[in-house]
Length: 275
Image (cartoon, rainbow, N blue to C red; front, side, top):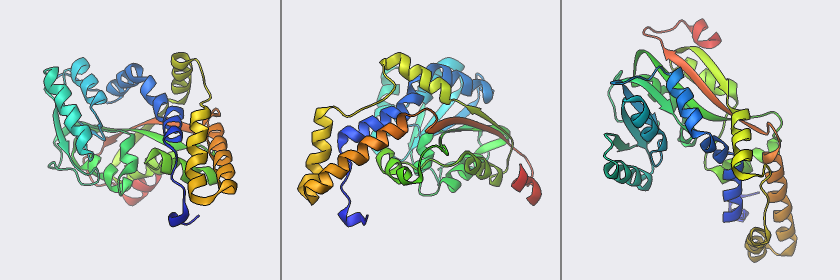
């Protein structure tokens, strides 16, 4: 469908897609951040950067629980402003910087570890964003990606709908790993966090399948009706319902913690290719 003729998704659908995907990650925050700190060997006194920090949930946890000096960077001006205000209110020594994630405003090799949150997948170039994380990390420091990964069970026809509704583009796991290798990251380890996300979301909400209520259905059909008539309104409702069904299926999309180490010397081509 041409962009000019596309009906934008209703707010109810945007929220439900976020609940089906992003909220699975957020619901496991405490356990997830503890695992990230363990994998990256984050300790008191270290310098840590979090790319795609949003309103500062991850940066605040790391600052409070590890004693590290944490810097958060995000392209969204409003999110950074809210993160800064919250840090001031709670007297947390966290530095924040508004910046595009594929062009970080830091010198080479200044952080002991770098963490790339899901917003990295919304950068103009995810490859450059990963390379930037590696660039600003000290040799033998850890680079950790917290990323959504496509599952083979999610039909190709649904993927562009998911990208539009999430505002970011997940990749296949092999693609994220290759980005890290291309950036000079070695000893790559992957922890599949999907089961933890699914279990925690079901426990927290009591439901595992998000669905449109009648107000949501009216939103979807009303927007399509005003633009293209009844036939498109019916098709829009079918399309959004099928998308939510696919996303709520087990393993329709995965969430992975991908960790590696910045090698201090340029890698041979074969090593960079084969990991």
